[in-house]
Image (cartoon, rainbow, N blue to C red; front, top):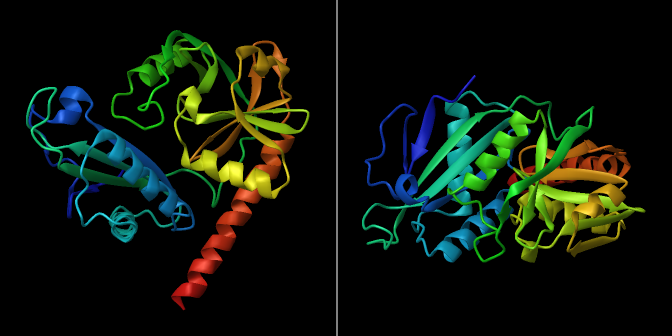
Length: 293
């Protein structure tokens, strides 16, 4: 089942409605960014975190968001589309922002447009850990640069496209991307965590990884669970040293890695954290319901 309706700025329209000319800046230059949001239990548990990242990204790219775009507007828009598209419990939203057309590399305006798409997500209620660990390997052909643009979810995703192609061609389920310092950066669509002797490590934002919403949530939950956490520099050899590797993103939550080269892994910490994640979502939902009474 796919979605039938989208929201373009403040108007709900049929998904097949033509929207762009050839001058669209997202098409021509990748001049925009996107956000992916999980809907679980008909709620968006981390909507405020997502909205903060939207504002931060727009600021980095010097794109002006319309004054009507608030966290409340975003929440109501996603809920409205979920109803229109028959998404009752589990779903996901993709929100694209792009600078409006005009100019070549140098834009003539910093105003922007937004497109929201809400679609079903085939999952049980809440976040679910994969039963079988996924198989991963390094993608080494192109390295990710470390700069101010590295942490955002840009519409220019060629590195991830090529890494995704490598993943498919080599019958992998995920790829580890390296940065231009030859350090571990992230997965193609997720942040990366490793566990060594019960201690949690993840690449620092300065290592070029996406500043993931779920990454931040997991860091907070690990601290509450009294798991030592270090945001640091990781080498490819650290993947071999690890007792556990898992990936995080806003839609799937946590997925654990079963195999990297000849190494096999456990999932003790990832089980602990996904239980804490689901409990956190339940508590947030109960708090929201009490506030609405």
